[in-house]
Image (tube, rainbow, N blue to C red; front, side, top):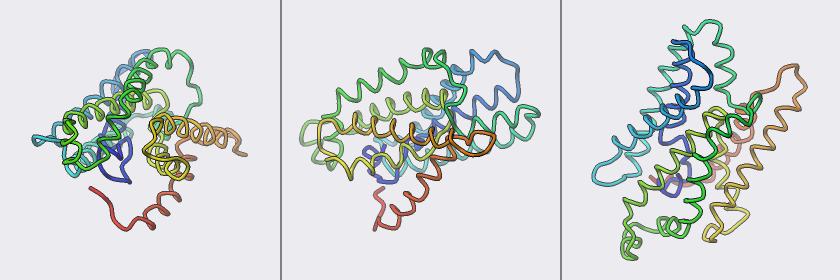
Length: 252
């Protein structure tokens, strides 16, 4: 997302799919009675619809980073507002929904992973195989076009792959924040961004960070486990503040 949007502060929820998937699940649980086996499909559909809305608003003959950011923020704001309204009338399910919205791996079983693994692993494998093409997109658009790369087409393609992976991850673990935002910056300080294994390295560092946060959440001294999203926010928030203080300008 940071490479496509040309913004070092971009995060995976920039396309609105995180808020869209969460809004769909909250809406179904709050309004109708549905078998929990259908919730992954509901969340997946909501996330992809939000992503499609963002891409439609951002497209003006090409993917413009500024329009993408504004469209993603607008779609996310609408979904968050709808979630807040539905939570007010969700009754006894409110506390469970609030815990899920904080994100976490507690109570998640292999059945969820079996349903959604293909929607994460397949786009991830395609992204890894096309990492060379992705590195070309990190160059200036004019340079990439000179090299024979259709910039807008590849940007849209990588955005679609990202939206699919994010939606599936949100359905499994909830909207866990800050991981996708801070991991690339951690990786840049450890490895060269231009190396062929840059994207797999980010995936590994992200998994390790999530594992560390989950361990900290489970080792909390309280009776109730701290939601994973709270821990990642406590880890990522200070990092983001430090990053903003060190960034002289934001690329949009």
